[in-house]
Amino acid sequence: MLQGLGRTQQDLLNALLHQAGGMSIDELAEHLAVTRTAIRQHLAALERDGLVLRGETRPTGRRPEQLYQLTDHAREQFPRQYQLLASALIDEVADIIGPEALATLMRNLGRKLALDREQQVVDETKIVQHMNQAGYEAEVFFRSSGDQEIVAHNCVFHRLAAAHPVVCELDLALIGALGGAEVEHTECMVRGGNVCRFKLRPTEPPTHH
Image (cartoon, rainbow, N blue to C red; front, side, top):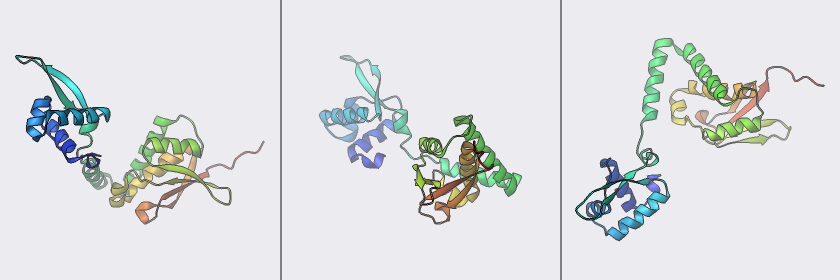
């Protein structure tokens, strides 16, 4: 997200990252070698975007100085290494419990995530809503046969799943638990597909009234 900002705004946020207590307009203007008017304009834009907030005021001999700080949202735009930690954890767990138990663990995690979202079985449209809240960019796709598929355009664990394909078991268990069905992974981005396609196969034949 920071890449979408101009150089001065990036430098301004970087300065505030290094001064957790906040900085005044005068300090920012001096640090970035731009005018106070320019700093005011940039701060207004960054406040509007939820990246900067007004912190405390600092007493001076004259008027108190308003300090500006980063929001938590802005801090999250700087590099994070969740991927590195998750990959190392999966390697370690695999060494300790073995590959079969790791696959079971991933399936259990998927089912738990499903239970956090729904207490009962839901249809594909509702499953897609839950997936989109988690960032999958999913939609329900109707085949010419009338069958429904769930198509996800964003694999939220992509780099992790590429290194550890067992991670896909979490996706399958999450979707399966939400839909009360076995899930067929008919196309997978990690295995070279353009999207991830999931097809629900009910575990019991439907009863006709």
